[in-house]
Amino acid sequence: MITCVLQNADEMNPDAFLACVEKDAQERAKRRRENRILADALKEKGNEAFAKGDYETAILHYSKGLEKLKDMQVLYTNRAQAYIKLGDYQKALVDCDWALKCDDKCTKAYFHMGKAHLALKNYSVSRECYQKILEINPKLQSQVKEYLNQVDLQEKVDLQEKEALESLDSGKNTAMATKNLLETLSKPGQTPLFYAGGIEILTEMMKDCKPETCVVS
Image 1 (tube, rainbow, N blue to C red):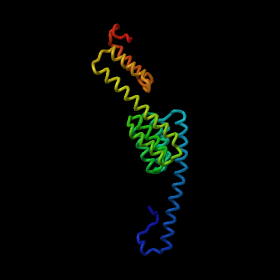
Image 2 (cartoon, one colour):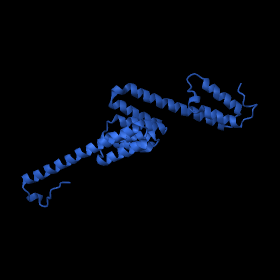
Image 3 (cartoon, one colour):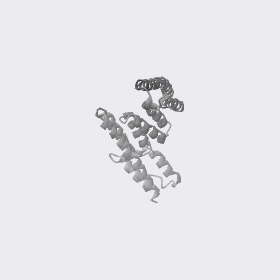
Image 4 (cartoon, rainbow, N blue to C red):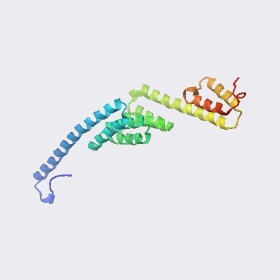
């Protein structure tokens, strides 16, 4: 808002009007520079807290920084990363959206979005986020490939766990289900469930079965 009083702008001297506009622009620029300094300082405090694993305090500093400068993209992506560390994936996604409003080519925003969607098991959306990084910066092909491999692996693990649980719930003999599950694990190309919850599944299976049926031959 122009700080000069312009009640009769049409009757105002053109030079005086331009001087008023220029003065207002200078004041705005000055306030922004001051707010930028404060926001940068709060970002550094947030980064220090993040490095110590104090993600709540980091979020507090990043949030205060955004109160000073609402279009500071790095504060959104940093806060999104802190939210991910705390498992608050929805808030992380909101911050990534805001970061992209500040800069629609922000690869960090797409990276954090991909990670949040992966944690939420939104595999197709996670892939889209990582692919977007490649569109923006083709030089990151090796990194993007690694991210996509992580999505494929996690999706495969979840599918195997789902199939194993469905097998248990189908009413089949416990010993046979255990044997089939172990056979599945031994097949080439199968992701070992022992590293993704398989131990928990097998433990649960063994709780209620009789000793004579729990032996897998």
